[in-house]
Length: 107
Image (cartoon, rainbow, N blue to C red; front, side, top):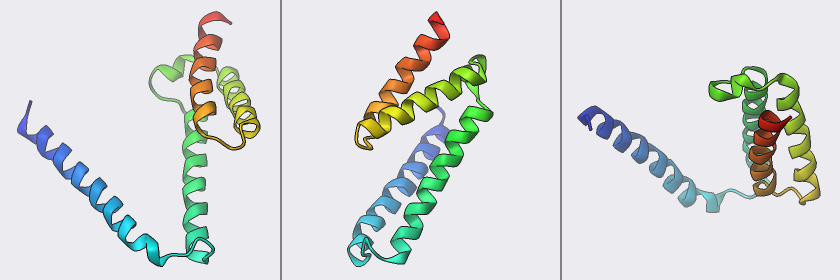
């Protein structure tokens, strides 16, 4: 392995764990009902929505082979699973992978 790859892994790991550590330390001072916390929560959901929309509209990698209709169908079905599972993220994530595989390979 190249030394540059090892350095890149170390630096990105340090940045990730440092930010998580600082977040854990400072999280006691932030109330969940504060406007700042709500703003960051909205920002996180907006970022997630943008990434999902980008994946559906401008896919990369092997997802390019899937049609728009199959990607949209998987998202709609996954949203349905999300709401019937009481807003659990695990079930729709697993469901979406299996659903996409079934739709692209057998339908």
